[in-house]
Length: 138
Image (cartoon, rainbow, N blue to C red; front, side, top):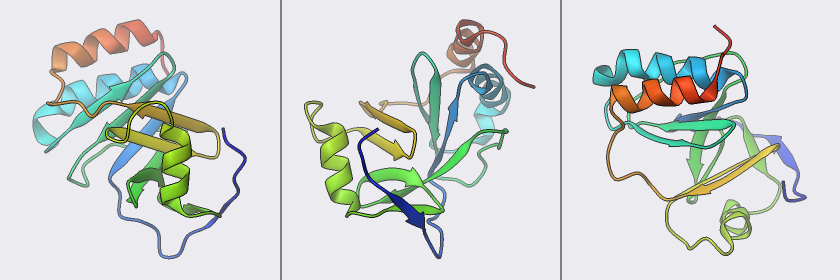
């Protein structure tokens, strides 16, 4: 991750998504698949060891090790933390070389840049992700 500091944010940002890493990815994909019809505007970005679920609603599930994300000047970052430099600069630094649109996530230990999914994933896609991610933490 880029060398920036993080400070407590008060009040916290409104929840716009959740980031899940490691062994929790499989479990979270399964939770999303089971609740796909009840989560409005769901978009999912996933990689080898992470999953970011975005939603317009506050119905996203929580799992141990997850990080609630809020939107700050185009940057998805922890709801309770703020970078010690402007979020717009963090967004530019993280997304350098990847274009200016899409999903840009920065936390103290994670940086993700990905295109914004055009539509919600199907339950079948989430179940495949669950199997690919391997055994998760219940």
